Length: 292
Length: 144
Image 1 (cartoon, each protein chain N blue to C red):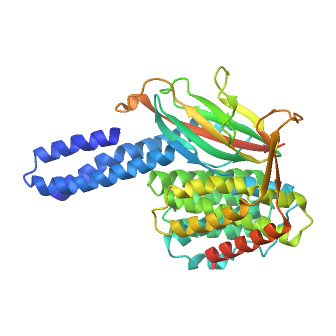
Image 2 (tube, each protein chain N blue to C red):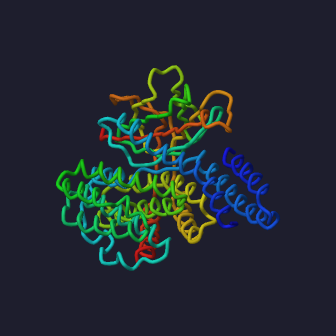
């Protein structure tokens, strides 16, 4: 509202000292109209914020469920120069970011360097090189053997990236990066389940992604008018229709065996093997469409 | 001349937006993230510039097997900011009202979505910058 007021005052001031009043006002009207539309969209999104756990948190959870580092899972670092459109660049920035996290969480120093290089290159392509700058690279190289420090640095850097993109009013790119990171984490989890079908904990972790997907869909819907977003949302909706088939049973939680307060419900998710297979296949297709 | 006027107008329009965003980022980095202490910051940006009388809602998901620290960090110009945590059936499961700290440590019995409702009390005056401020909802995690 304050921006509208300032804009209104500016129009009155400009209109009073400009001879070519009508033309100027008509052009300014367009600018103000666009700005007000952008403001309304931002406020709408800002007051309902959707977010999901970061790839760092998700990959750490997968590791505890028994996941290993499989060299074939992450995207090929040599493909980094293939991505040209904003949608490709945003999604693959998220993909490489998750791959960087995957290598970091499993202490794979060589792979960490490869994926750091990919993320830095993608940063340049997205004109956010001031976030992935020399300082960050040096911090990462200095801490490459320290998993905990690396996770903190990566999380902080992606936070800086998110904040920078929002400052630049490029929230849609930020959303694409989040989608790419989530798809890659889910791809790694589902590929691991494919190799280890007996790992029930991992299956459960895959099923739980339905909650992150609900939030992710809410986030992307806010930018559905942007180029490329419709396709992204359509892929997420397809995955949502699969996740929605998972049986969910809620009951009041009674277990308080924790040193902190436990809140929320006890929820049991049941996913049939057929549904899991369907999900693995579709995730594989969507992920490969993004990286190839 | 027309181009200069347009440029001035555009700058006038954009400055408050860039300013509040940048201010919010600086505030979050300096005043809020350190409060997570031993919890690993999850790297997610959950910020909004709110005026008195306004509220914001966040949809977040939390994993079982983790301990979480939630910190609702608000600029001093916004007094007595409070928040509630609700399940997806809209049952209130935690409220910060009457609590001495805006920091809340918790865990969840199963992975689930939770809703965080942040409220800035008072009568709004969105024309004045004095009545606006940054609110950040930060999440840190640690293995249980």
